[in-house]
Length: 297
Image (cartoon, rainbow, N blue to C red; front, side, top):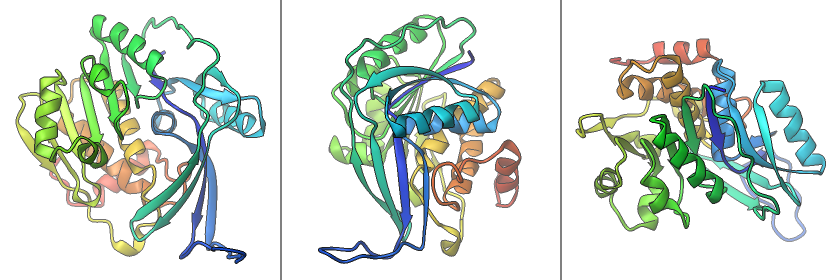
């Protein structure tokens, strides 16, 4: 085991459509994709596609969507540690003009404790705040062992403040800033106070505001993807997280600026493809995307 990811499993059905039908109306989408979903789950699959096969603690139900997910994990070489739930979670995703609407059905009632794993050789942990009991347990273990802990702060959860006290790298969404009534610079100050040595706020097409190892606040602009090439922005943040974890595992002597430049190219690749699976790049595809833009790194 090189890295452990903990999150919630979805099956995503992504429809490319210009409108949603109402009432008794029917409408045919332009295109669609069915894939794995969930923040840390998609990040784990991204890391695997790039070349480092992680372990993943994720809920799986004994139903046909659950069996589909088991097949996906096996195909990507993700070592899956199942936490049973009664029913699979499903997302319906509708990208439109650089944004996306999402409707979710979720079962996060866990009848059994989380799996306790042998962490020998593991070097990084990535969380999205789901499975709060497992998240805090492993965050404390990794922090005590001096191993990297990372959090995707997509939205506020009951355990967010406590969990951040055990996180090295916290990259949060602008949505979390809105929920906490904090502007992005104030959010960075909050992450510093919680002890995160690297912190960032993703701002969609406006890139990311973050602070580096010295605490200096910096701006990372997004790559200038032409509007007509943007297909589906859903999952771009998850790919960003999975890619910087891969970059860290691949060479942890690099600066976090380098890891984030790599991850930015990976997420730029993602938004040009429909659905999470089609949007996962190989290492060569990340490097080609990175080389295709003016990138000072």
